[in-house]
Length: 92
Image 1 (spheres, rainbow, N blue to C red):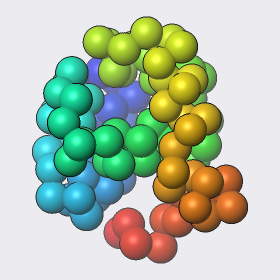
Image 2 (spheres, rainbow, N blue to C red; image 1 turned 180 degrees about the vertical axis):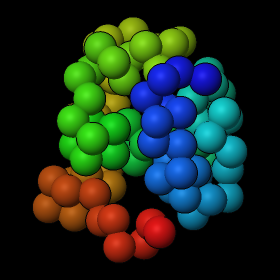
Image 3 (cartoon, rainbow, N blue to C red; image 1 turned 120 degrees about the vertical axis):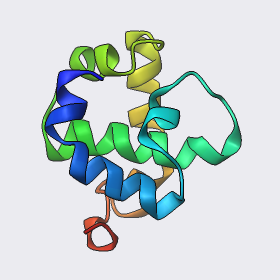
Image 4 (cartoon, rainbow, N blue to C red; image 1 turned 30 degrees about the horizontal axis):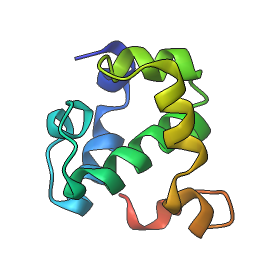
């Protein structure tokens, strides 16, 4: 597992628990619909709460390229839904 994922593993696993998925499945190349929201939220949390760069997130999601991460974060519905912020109140 990548360093930034290990460093913030507790918070990211809480997000995954909310969606009833595993963190490894979220960062893996699986494109099924059930992983879209948690993947989006994990990427946004890494970008906006922990202030990681797109390149660092890209390395954590090693199967995606830089532009895919930028697109994922910019077009994330959870981010838009909460006034361009993720609602952290649901995550312990």
